[in-house]
Length: 202
Image (cartoon, rainbow, N blue to C red; front, side, top):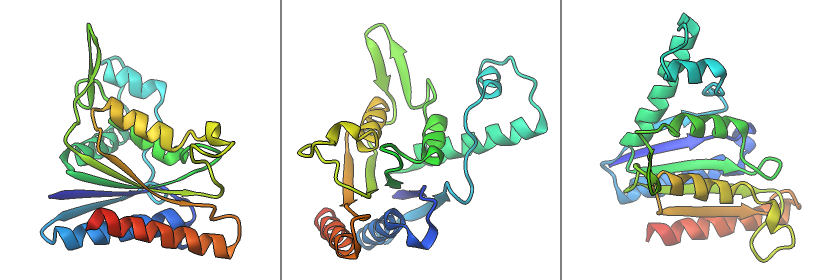
């Protein structure tokens, strides 16, 4: 059992998504004490955003400077970690109705034709199925499907969509919502997330 733990919040110890993702990992380790855990902190050590040089290198047309070679190697390492994982736990706060740019950059390095998906005459096919994704989702407000601002959710909808594109249909969200609406709401949101962790760990 290989667990991949990815955090992306820029808030450090004050991050709710980091707190929840760590507790999910702890629960998974209790269930699978033999598991190997790989940790990646995208705020502390970000993967570079895609550039024209990356795309040219992928097509064999770029002059690969030492800096570009290091960056390509970092992207390959991120992809290898993801492909090797049986369970991926992702700390994913909502920033401006979407995900942190650091998390988007990491996902861009996973979206590699022939590795996580391929195109066919009948459309794209995901190649990374068989994994389980657990997302520690934190939100300052409430954006669930029953809310009037549900249309602004480009965080969970995007994550479910992109991992589905990779062929992964086992995606679970452990959600803490309303954390910016006062200390009581924050505490309630964390308690609710902890109850959900207990349910998936049962």
